[in-house]
Length: 241
Ligand code: UDP
Image 1: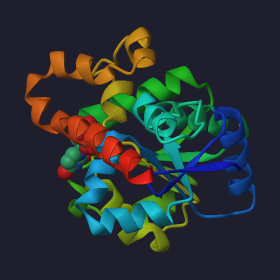
Image 2: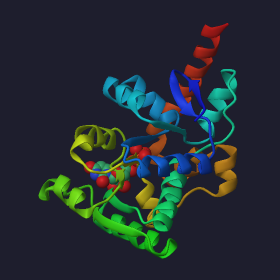
Image 3: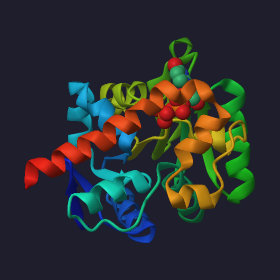
């Protein structure tokens, strides 16, 4: 699979179809793989968190999660064209799992959220086997490793927010018989219809952040990271000439 280096990260330069095909092959060959969505916010978090930086560098598929990364690639002389978002990758993996009979486990989110996300996926993809769920606020109440392993799940979506989900995956990956791990942040909230996604035209224009900000003005502090990101790209570009 082709990759392009963007700010020191090897981002996959591919299509959804090729990515899902490759992951199916990983499943068939019993490989362990970690998928991480890279967006401006994640890059800024990496800058201040050596653990996260190491985790991301070791991950198998760094996907360009939104137009912010495509823009960074372009500004830095790269050619990344296709965004591959975390939530759409999750949806496509679920579709593939329903067709080929792979089992899925959903970990994270509030109890009612993870439950709604499960119902949504079952309605959307006939025959999908959601082998288990666990909300992200009572994880200590159960033997989670045993629960996931006994479910027989091969694909695990972890929705604990970043970097909590990355810490969790890093700590538990080797104890689990799961093949595919993906940290999916707030995706269960969207699938369970607790949070609305920005309209497609806003996603395409790269202003999904504006939609989120209007819906939830307290995100302003998180979104300062976007400004810092653009400043970082400019610095990086200058450093090259
Ligand atoms: N969450 C959780 N347990 C925690 C903290 C957060 O399950 O201890 C869930 C939270 O309910 C939400 C998701 O993690 O569903 C975080 O979503 P957010 O949009 O903040 O994630 P991001 O992708 O921005 O990191």
